Length: 468
Ligand code: BG6
Image 1 (cartoon, protein in one colour):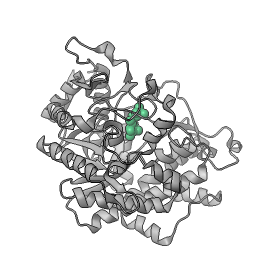
Image 2 (tube, protein in one colour):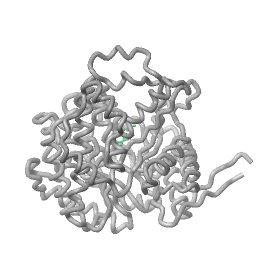
Image 3 (cartoon, rainbow, N blue to C red):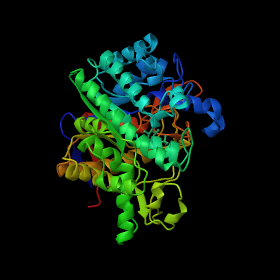
Image 4 (cartoon, rainbow, N blue to C red):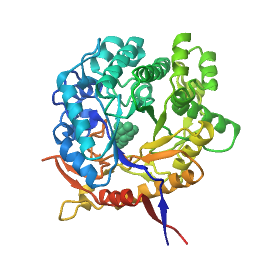
């Protein structure tokens, strides 16, 4: 049996991407931390491929927007690279070449009837700011980011109606200071990570304030990777561990962004442990007064959590004192990325936002499945039969639709990603796009999922198979 799931009128059928993963190095005056990492440690990246060329969006964007239109996208998220737009990082003075590029890109999206969401930070801090000031550990960097944001709003705020301050801000301390999988690849720096979490929340609020000061006719939000924590059991210890992991990894950004304050329990724990961030009353007021208009939620996989087996293992403060990851034996895993596939979490996230965050309007700002070796599904005409991806989207959309039927205020679905793009560490190993790219000649070919998405967007509905 088939069932057609209808979505509300005006629903966004789009895709997500980012500047540092698509544009390539061309014309940039500053390196971002990913460029710097690649220049120094090429072997960290799959097949030694870096962000220097990436998907050459810098030159291909007119063709890419045409293709996006062809697969039915009515909206698209990418990011402005701080390291491209700004010439003088201390004053926020723009670089004319960067301005021209983003101006043309915005015009091209408009020409193709694609609503743009512009994000201001996708892990791509200018490398000099890490070297000079310690990156997001520094409140001076917060002020420099505010200047960059203000410049971007002044330049493009009349043409772009949807802005976001950060993509997955939690990944910055998590990957760079706690578990060492992104540059600067530090581990065990719990106290520094907490300061970074606070500073980025402050930076986001300051950018929102700047946007509102300029009285632009648009909306501003933030994009968070909400990874629900499911406990191993209903025991008190496991439930406590899951609640802590949720507070630390999700609510530490979700609460300030939507409610204007940090989760109480997390604050109590870090105060008790003597690792609280440095804050002022005025900064807390800025956070309280500048909450988001809308929320973007990236969802790929859940977190499975249990009580920590050895909390004493961490003499220096680490969140792992309070929780430990657990492998659910029944998990369905995407073997190429090692991530669990669990569509039910899409429903759970939607209900959490509805029930506990004032049913704020939100959209799915990333969701997707990275697959290695897609060439084996290639047809004679160059297209790829990525049925697994279509299946993945259908399952997640069915859960989203279920939550929307129950009142969740979701206005769009942006899979990751439009065209295959470069990734931190994995480079082009796993492909996510609706549109494939041959790295030898940058030739673009629409995959089966792209044709499928066009039909979904045209009908504003998804047809799924049901058991009865
Ligand atoms: C998200 C990021 O976490 O996941 C993207 O916002 C990233 O930048 C995407 O590319 C997919 O993850 P990965 O590591 O497989 O590229």
